[in-house]
Image (cartoon, rainbow, N blue to C red):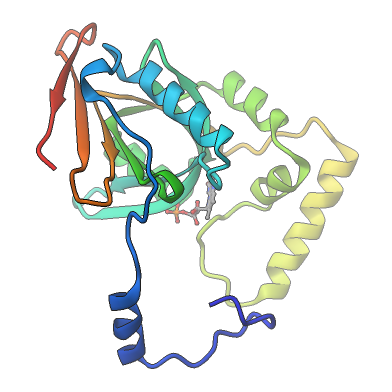
Length: 234
Ligand SMILES: Cc1cc2nc3c(=O)[nH]c(=O)nc-3n(C[C@H](O)[C@H](O)[C@H](O)COP(=O)(O)O)c2cc1C
């Protein structure tokens, strides 16, 4: 690992991958404690505590998370996304993407999702599940304008995840998008949207190097007002 500088991957035989797997450590300590009994009544504040600590202890990209969705046929899909907002009191997590992308279309068909955070430096995993709602146009535009120029250009280029048989076509689209942004700094990509997941389950998982992992699941009641805390077997 880490020896390639050209972008080309070194030749690796499949058997040596399996051999390497055997030598790799998981959940190497020291890891933080998680006192399940002293956890707050709702998951939002605990997410806040864990997140602030992750930032303070320099966990790499703690705001990167896996978004899992299902398509209209019930087939799962997943990819990494950036967390854009959290409302700890409401128990909501918000991300942004193109409504025309595969995940955008999947969320149209099945507006439910799961988010997974993994912070290896601390052996911590957080799983969030629930229904997802797309924000209205004005809020999406406001969020789009808060993004950095590179992200805005990417969205203006558009057609995320479509096949790219000819990279020069994409380079031309990109150049056009850069010019568009230069000339009209207030331009907004029509397909950019924020999606907010309102959690009905949130699980906090603290790894332990002696396999005595600590798990706490929060379950929201049907009325959406109260949370029950449920410790889980590791
Ligand atoms: C660290 C990281 C952050 C990312 N953040 C976003 C994001 O916030 N929004 C987004 O649309 N794609 C993001 N991506 C790209 C997605 O993983 C994915 O490739 C893309 O959205 C297409 O997904 P889809 O084909 O399932 O729609 C990110 C990728 C990585 C590795």
